[in-house]
Amino acid sequence: MKPEEPTHGGSTAAEYFTDYLDFFRSSVVESVTALPEAEHRTTRLPSGWTPIELLSHLLHMEERWFVWGFLGEQVEQPWGDWQDGEPGTHWSVDDHTTLPDLVDRLQAVGERTRAILRETALSTRGQVGERFEGDPPDLQWICFHVLQEYARHAGHLDIAAELATPTEESR
Image: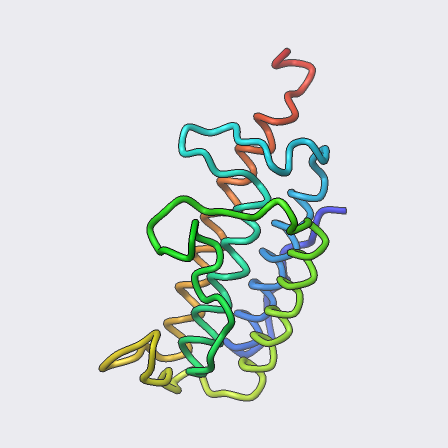
């Protein structure tokens, strides 16, 4: 079932961010899980990423910004979405990682983000540490950044899903 876009009116900025992050998270999960299983690890694009790799990228990206960056907490593999943990390389998911594993991890990261947004003013600056040196961004900037990354990649996934499951008219 396709997630519904959040309604407007009456919410705080933090609630809007929470609602839209939930919406995009759900949209991405729905798009990937709706694909035939063989398509999860199949690329349809010249850049070479697969739907399961995109899902992994988004969960690591969100964790990098909110937990590792904003909170300044250690995370096990902040760059675990990249091949050999090296930022800037191709996204990667090992053969033992399953789609349900990634969905569960994404939901846990989403829970963490929701808690941060419930408990913290948007004007609060992130922690100086491994992720941010010098002048860390505030929570509002991080929310905008993560939201635009979700929106952009959800659009990419829509295209990949369309290429993976052509309509009758396109055959």
